[in-house]
Length: 332
Image 1 (cartoon, rainbow, N blue to C red):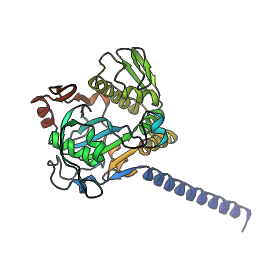
Image 2: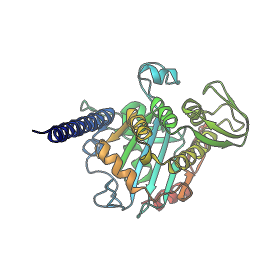
Image 3: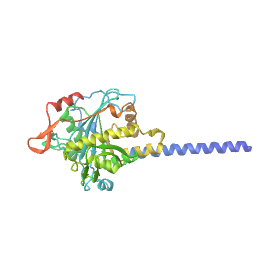
Image 4: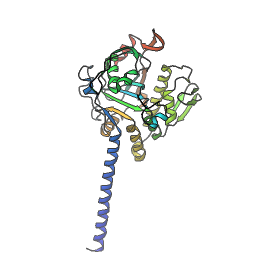
């Protein structure tokens, strides 16, 4: 073989080796992201005694842009050192610190996000446990106890019982995952209308516009006692403002041209994520993300479930009827 042939052969082997390494690296990255996600088979656990679906076969595929309803929870998971450092408490248990029902309209160019105050008193239905037993039905208990006693399955069942809205998919992100996501996006810019000084969420901000890192954004999502409102409803309003700001940050970040940042964002999202088994793989989450390519922050309407002070406890709230039922009806 001549010198030119040896050079071409060496170049070919080098290219083949590079391709193999690239394929191996891509496979490792996919498996890593896939291993990050915790999947819960909510459909099997709850069976058929549920509200009717808005669409017969809900999908996260970009080709399927039918209506879709998701329950999104932010949990104060107490597992792991990172969550503990961020205020997750001791080593056992978790609560749903944030609960939002997200309704994606047909075409997925508009969406409605309904926040459920965690202090809402509800009837918590009996929920199946993984060991085959069930929790007891409970009346006049705080909404966030559903997750505490029965995890994602009970959270979904409780939301469906109180709204008669079928939840197609479930997503939960913990403290650490949320903070890492914000940092991977380069922070988030939020405007607050009043000074915040909350020792419990470790956040101190003057009124005005701030660019927050992950820990600060988490503090804003959790703050309650450091604002003039000092209530769960005041916290919900801050959470909704933060959601809008995050959507604007994501839409303004061209992740496809920055593979390193794209991976950091994907790793952050999946690292603290629990989903139903219909969304528990990177490909399914990517499909959902692509289907939302035409959704802008301005097209997302954020509302809070109508509530009034609970007659039995002024520190709690109950659904304000018929306004609450009319809101849920509009999402079916």
